[in-house]
Length: 255
Image (tube, rainbow, N blue to C red; front, side, top):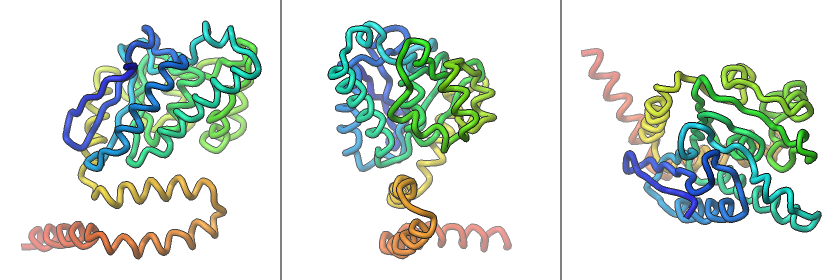
């Protein structure tokens, strides 16, 4: 419930948000359902990549369910936002790279969930924003990632004004990785997914773990921590395989 899984290739899963209205809004049942689905998908050892998307073309996620938010108290508000934090963390710590597909509107909690992904690819007619202040609540939880991702000046603009920006502008700010023509969106996402599928599955998961660990460490600690990980990679056999393939191609091209 609240999600549909498809496999365009054996190594790529597409998780589509369903039964959440035409704008894919996040209510408590939707949030819980997505967390459960992500937990189950995380056990799939054959995956190299997860694509996260909304139903239809009007929105990835247009934010939290205002009807539910309007009934919250201080206590139930903490419970709601705690669940949304858990959903974002399920994406941030998903064992393989997560590509977030952005089309139409991506607002509020939807943008926080998108920021929790590893790669964000948007249609050139999409818009993003953090409009929470306009309905009397602050942007919280994974909005805290925004200053580090795009700088304090740009983060302040989005969080304090509540104004939307185009995907083209979001891409220039570094909030989105790529902005492509709407009709090319799925083609480009599958192209990136195919590139990830060509990478060794062990090193792909290892690199994502390192990215998450580095977020919590000083630069010197991260540098020292990575030395052991580099050595460990040679126990998997993947470096030997991929390096030998590279050397064989290089040798063949010289003949």
